[in-house]
Amino acid sequence: MARFSISGVTISGIAACVPKQVVSNYDYDLLNEKERRLLVKTIGVETRHVAPKYTTTLDYACAAAEKLFEETNCDRSEIKLEIFVTQSRDFYLPSTAVIAQDKLGLPQDCMAFDIGLGCSGYTYGLSVAASIMKSTGIKKALLLVGDVSTVTCAYNDTSTYPLFGDAGTATLLELSKGNQWSFDLHSDGSGEEAIKIPHGGMRHLLTEESLIERKREDGNTRSDLHLQLDGLSVFNFSITKVPKSLNSFLDEVNADRELIDFFVMHQANKLMNETIRKKVKFDPVKVPYSLSQYGNTSSASIPLTMVSELGSQLGVPRKLLLSGFGVGLSWGHALIETNGVICPKVLEI
Amino acid sequence: MTIEDFISKLEAEFEDVEPGTLKAETSFRDIEDWSSMHALIVIALIDTEYDVILSGTDLQAANTINDLFELVRTKQ
Image (cartoon, rainbow over all chains, first blue to last red):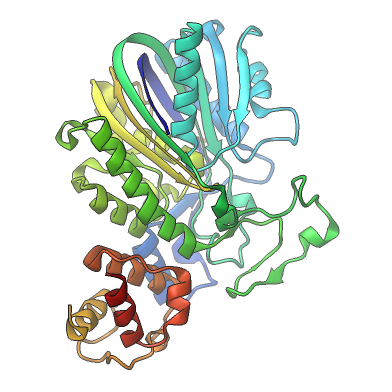
């Protein structure tokens, strides 16, 4: 079982950056007014920040990192580990993290690599960064996390188009005294079809056929380069395996829910997240949402919610439960202690 | 759990459905403006109220509200 604890790492700061352009689901003319109201009420997404063409996750994450360096007075030459968690990389190759090393002026003796995960990516990224820092003694690490998902959502697909927003985030981690962090990480590749972009990878190289938009069984129209999402399967996965593993994780680490300040979940869908919240028995005041303003921002949703909804509340020592779940299927939980996190306001570019 | 109780819970979830209008033999897909969103609402309701998870296949196989009720009963 990938359940383990690490102590002696803390988060010094988190910054988030989103596109300036805001799109409202109340203007989505594929649905009638009544359907739009039901959609907003059920999934909880009113507006989304949408990236213009050719602006990428790297751009948003680097803007967030620059803001973070400025606010934390961080000497970037001290960063010896940089991890980029994304499923919307700039190129087939090289890795986005390596491009970011140069773009951000990080030293060349900094290890940099990508992790290709989506909704579960932030908790995975924290666990990998913290593990490497503890085993190597690297004192400062930069975790860049985010996705530009809107470019892969077909306008004529109501199961994806109104859900997603774009964002890039940067988290600065440092070795410190104390701070117990526990992780619980899971994978179930048998659910690979639930959330998928079928073409454009090695299994189905890009061909002319990949670009053809076809009407699917569910009534939605998309190409095989677009994101496909089986809402019911994802919903069932999320309300069964996620709360079950969370409850078992919290029991094993003897976590007292009363002593956890905030439970920050991946921002997937309001009905789904609320069902999970009730099953894990957390008071609504401890569970922040950024969904209505930003939509589902994939791997960025947890750090974006921490910045946009908690902000200065993270300026004092806190105990946080984080949970990411989705594409893969992949899910991961983290129970972390922080000593005061600097969170500048969400940047818009 | 009774069918009457089950129906009134369903009616409470749907904004445009007047109490007392749904029957056991009502085909739930005929409820006005039924969409995939309603399917999620029904799954969440049944999970929260009866601790039963219905899959997409379960929903596809069911036609009437009574079919749903029986499914929940057998899975409880």
